[in-house]
Image (cartoon, rainbow, N blue to C red; front, side):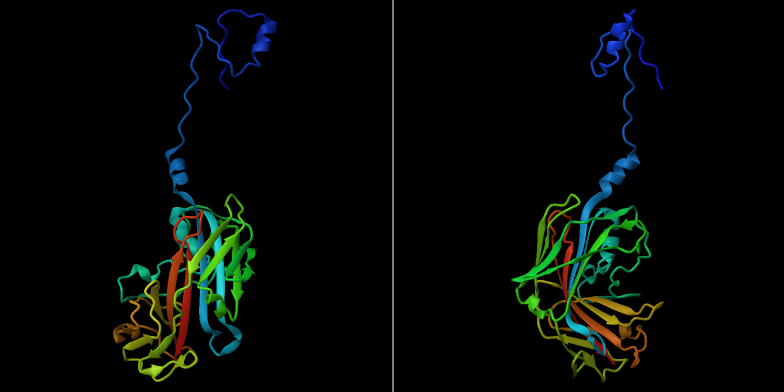
Length: 324
């Protein structure tokens, strides 16, 4: 350690001892010397701090009809909620969304009425990502959360997130309600939080768009979520009954088959009809009685969560059809 400055002239021993305690009083002395300037923070440390922010990812999803094909006991008309709140690197916001099942690249990023191929549909809740995070991700406990619609109230469950993404630790909130169609009738859904981990209490509301329902595939009417009689080599004509100009509209067509590009994701104009060209559907896996194609039509609206960046609350209304 550096030696303290020497006094300019002899001091009595007792007075020198007293002066040692006056650490914050300046002493004017002809032989005094300046302290070295404090070094500025390292550039990479400042950049890392600048990239961090408080963010949220909240997914509300209403699934019309039975959740699992040929399994009525699995529930129907399910409203599911998943939410995480985080201190996170801005470059990892997409990874934060995967913890609540939000697609990393929603179809709204595509030109209207166009489709792309991909290897998966919506990531399952809590599924691991092949992308490593840029930095640690701290998931926050923001107190008690409650979903509200009119006079209805339902608390969310809080649980530790399994270590599915490296460097992500903390809690996630979940809720699932079957026979939940009446929750949509209030016209809006609100997520109410009491606050915690430095986050203030908040209320995040989202307006419910018109329900979506696939009416025909080709010339065949949909009956109980199933369609038969549409040839493989034909263009896939899709029609839906209700039109809503306030929401995104997305189409997913494909089947779960690991290791293949087995899905089409399309960004649609909400005008009641869309045709998927045969040249695209021919690239999908073969349909079989055991593995039919799944056709999912999805309306999505987004809203803000006060105190967190961006429109991080997504409400999705979906209708699914099995194409045998």
